[in-house]
Image (cartoon, rainbow, N blue to C red):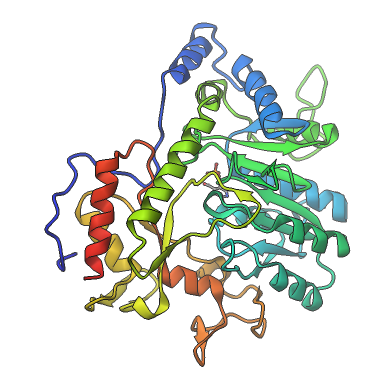
Amino acid sequence: MFTRKDNLEPFESKVWLASPTMHGEELKYMTEAFETNWMSTVGENITEIERIMAEKVGCGYTVALSSGTAALHLAMKLAGEKLYGKAENGRGALFNKHVFCSDMTFDATVNPVVYEGGIPVFIDTEYDSWNMNPDALERAFEIYPEVKLIVIAHLYGTPGKIDEIKVIAEKHEALIVEDAAESLGATYQGKQTGTFGDYNCISYNGNKIICGSAGGMFLTDSLEDANKVRKWSTQSRENAMWYQHEELGYNYRMSNVIAGVVRGQISYLEEHIKAKKAIYYRYKEGLKDLPVKMNPVPKECEPNYWLSCMIVDRDAMCRQVRGEKDVLYIGEHGKSCPDEILEAISSINAEGRPVWKPMHMQPIYRMNGFITENGNGRAQTDAYVDGEVVDVGMDIFSRGLCLPSDIKMTVEEQDRIIEVVKRCFE
Ligand SMILES: Cc1ncc(COP(=O)(O)O)c(C=O)c1O
């Protein structure tokens, strides 16, 4: 329990990390689906969001699916079949193939690699963007020259160094799956994320910048790929009088009711981004005198500011020891740590969260390859060796946290959160 400076009033209703923000039109489109009886995985809401989103993001085609994870799964399957041919029965399209993956991300980025039988190899993170480090990626190709697929995510809505990663991918004739689940509306060199990969995915789950309560989308410029994904997502039904199946299928299509929620949200994307950006800069200003930094906004990027995060300076960290599921810290004058700050935030009825725990540190993926810029190709037990950083992801995880970033948070509520963070460093 947080005890050090728990003298601020808790909020009456909880301030969330990122909860759905509805506007009313969502209900209109859901009701239309109900009243016209298109309570299924076909209907006008689906057709419309596919059309509007392709236009908005700037790609040829989109396919509405039940989740971002489903979109990523079918993206992996497409990539695997293109690279290695059709999978044999019982084997995924990436069977036994190594795949380079972003390390600091949500596990939904990489699990679909495994659904298709692939073996993720994690590429360390860079401080510049908190995304995949292109130099570590280049090193990874020296160790695994046979790799032909790279999966990149844009953490917290901030694009990674896509141009550098694309150059490396082209040099090694590798394809890219772009996981833009968190970064819808963010741009890199003026172009939207979700258009850079060979296969691209976004998510509409409840905490995203716009949401459908659930749902995701596959984005592509290839009509052939879009058609394949649409077919696979509806149990791979052939065009025949009866249920005819020639290949493995999935029940991954989006419901027309969910599509109604998404349809009602789409026109609010820019407004949501503006609100998130204001939150980010209010934190930046409010915390500027503390020994902390906000998550980076790299050159040539316009993030969607989905989550505001901060990282405690190394020399301002109090002692914090994390086990698998628990943590101990010792508060110190002038110093603090993510777990103390998270407890303090929680003590006023607000929700923060640790930075996503890197994949190479997760028990499920601990034995997989992990490539850092300077390390020895194996996971380390500490982020530092002789005072030098050897594992950037582990370092950001131990010093970073996500601040409450809900659009509905008032300025006064945010001020109180800033105040509670400040008190941790007294
Ligand atoms: C980076 C990332 N990838 C993939 C996903 C999966 O999306 P969904 O929850 O729609 O399956 C999420 C979010 O949940 C995410 O944050």
